[in-house]
Amino acid sequence: MSALLQVQDLTVNFALRTGDLTALNGVTFALGEGERLGLVGESGAGKSVAGFAIINLIGKPGYIAGGRVLFQGEEISALPEEAIRRIRGHRISMVFQDPMMTLNPVLTIGTQMVETLQAHRNIGQSEAEAIAVDKLRQVHIPSPEKRLHQYPHEFSGGMRQRIIIAIALLNDPQLIIADEPTTALDVTIQAEIMDLFLELCRQTRMGLILITHDLAVVSETTEKIAVMYAGEIVEEGRTEDVVRRPRHPYTQGLIAALPQGDDQRGTRLNQIPGTMPTLTRIPPGCSFHPRCPHAMDVCSERAPGPLPVAYPDGGGGMAACHLYDPNLGDR
Ligand code: SF4
Image (tube, rainbow, N blue to C red; front, side, top):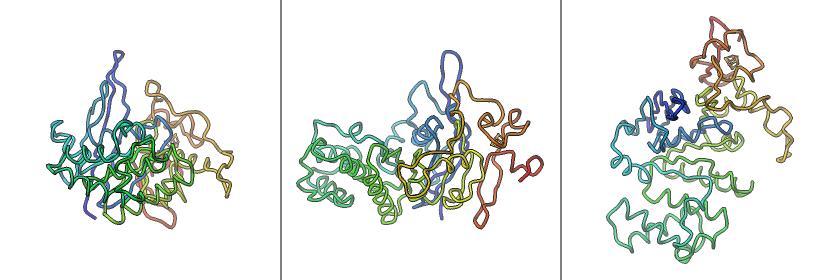
């Protein structure tokens, strides 16, 4: 599988009067063509910062302090703003949680889709409308020719999210970055939107980075998972391996906190004690050590690097944890 995206040692800082804070710390991962990756973690883990950093959309006072991003072999993190703007919304699209933040309430869906198309391509009104209708049909909006002339408030929440996905598809991107795309929707609609992403990825060989706090959503939709904690990737592997036999204590805690059995409202009996540290209070050593049931002396002294791990009855992966250091841990 050829590499679609390579994120190498990507670091994002926020420059504050009191000094720089690191929001993303040396994040590295790769995605093949048509591959689906889940970036998972609690709120504040740096997942969205990673998504924005890939397309160089970090707003001030944030800035990319190190590392690089290669898209189809081209180093896009080094491109001037004008060139990266041609890639954003064209070869790489983003889908956000709240469609009403993305859609303009005073313009019809058709106007917004035509404007988006014409911003990237030199095409006339009727050709742009035909493409818009085609994309609305692709995301299963009924009677797309009619719906083109309606305003966002005339659609349900699930339909609005489908329209956002249709807009993201307008220029046939090779990669979609979806940031909590179903969090604002009820469970049934969430499942439908996730099914739609799966269908589109399979149809078009488009890559997907799904950013979410919801491990259940990721486990049904993606092939690989990268688990984030305090701005770093702490575990990465094939989705079924990570979900069935997580290696990193943080991932183990996330899995143990998932609702059990058929009760979708399930009681979360096994929450990880404590909270994610804020950027100003990242503990020394392993940032998870104050919450970790397996913490050793070394954990508060030295940050663990990425180490290879093997999943029982599965493939290989990575965990940033001293437990997997053959010179330190007791595996
Ligand atoms: Fe726990 Fe230590 Fe591993 Fe961190 S490095 S997750 S504190 S065992």
